Image (tube, rainbow, N blue to C red; front, side, top):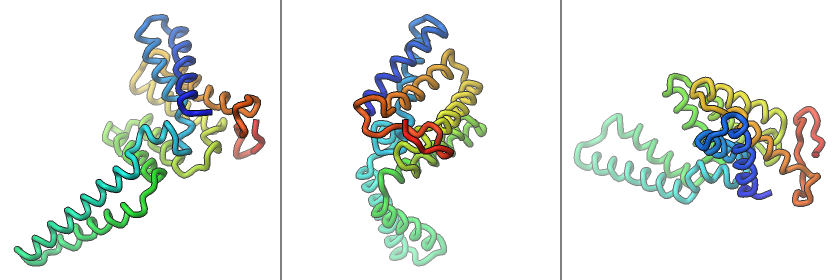
Length: 213
C-alpha cells in the first residue's frame, strides 16, 4: 500500500481516537495529525513518504557537503599562503576531506541515519528527553532494517508505544497515545496479505515467528 494511503488511514483513525477522547475540534485535529504521522512511521525502513519527509534529499546533501568541504579546503590553502602552517590546518583539512569523501558515499538511507542521530542529540539538549531519545533510536534502527521487518511487527508496536508513553508524560496532549497507537497499528493492518492490494504480508511476531499474515 502507498504511503499516501497509510497517511489517509492514519489521519482517519487518529481523528476517531481524538473524538472518543475529547469531542472538540482542536483535540480531533491534533489527534488526526498524530494518527497520520504514526500511520507512516513503520515505513521508515524504506525510501518512501515517511523517510523522505524527514530527511534532506541525497542530491541536496551531496551539494551541501561538497560546497562545505571545498570551502574549508580553499580557506586553508589561503591561510597557508598568507599565514603559514599551523596545527589547526590538519584538523580542518581532515574535516574538509571527510566531507568530500562522505558526499560521494552518502545514500538516502544514511541520510535517515544522520537524521536519527540529530534527533538523539536534540533529546540530550532538551534535558535528556526520553521520548525524543527513543524516537531518535527508532529512526536509527529503522534506517538499517529491511522493509517490512521489525517496524512491521509487535516489537515495533511496543517500541512505538514506549515513545508515545514518554512523549505524553513530557508533553501531555489529550489523545496522543491512543491516536498514535491506532495510527501505527492501522499501517500494519493495511499491509496484511489478506488485502488483495498486498503481495506481501506482515510478520507480526518477528523475530520469533516469521510467518507473514
